Length: 318
Image 1 (cartoon, rainbow, N blue to C red):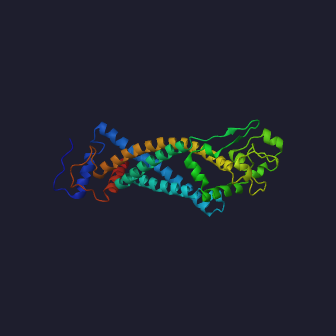
Image 2 (tube, rainbow, N blue to C red; image 1 turned 45 degrees about the vertical axis):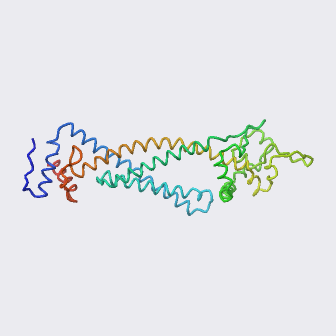
Image 3 (cartoon, one colour; image 1 turned 135 degrees about the horizontal axis):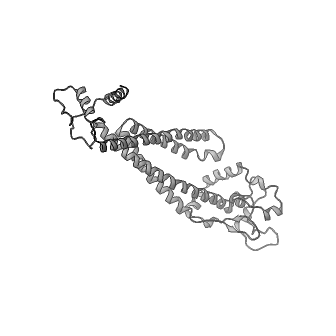
């Protein structure tokens, strides 16, 4: 049995006896296993947060580069990238400091932010699956490509794409990407035998049902009257063009939802490890392996943990 601490010992000597009391030589085997698991959880959460901390640097760099770039398509994504980059940086820094240096308040902040991040990611994933549930193209007889109708998509996406400022940004992006320039030299045979992307089908040609015979008096699709052969007009203001953009968004959002589900599983696993590391850090504050210390007057000095680390290394060397 370890000796009882003498009441007349000085403060530093008391810390030495506390450290000796719970040193590996005086600690039962089951407590050693528990302490090893605690150290493992702190090391693992610190390592994972170091990786995400380094990964946030290129994300922030990409957002800043897009902010300086004059291309409309690239500047359109700069705000989400910067928010994600700085968010990951702050979360990872708090988790790394809290786990590796036993800073309980930093780990507490890390766990709170992680909880909000997991909840926000769940809401975003469910919302994305709901709003992209509708849509899809219609087969065109005798053609490989499909045509898209704006009415097929969810009301939220339709209202978003009809916003003039939003659509002006998207239209400038499509025009700058020269997507329709690839179809300039197509022959009628190419339209029969070659496939098109949703944007090419909706923005670079009139609907297949259009009839431009002057003798035709039957009502036609409104997009037939919006079409113009000028390369800077084409069908960029057609509803079919907006529907083609929404189809691209739908496909990309479905891919993003799969990634979000994978990220949710990873974040929940990291959060669980972080909870173990937080509990380990709270116990390390009083150096009491059985749980919360009832000796409320014991408050280690600021240099105690560094001194304890040096004391442990010195015993390993000698």
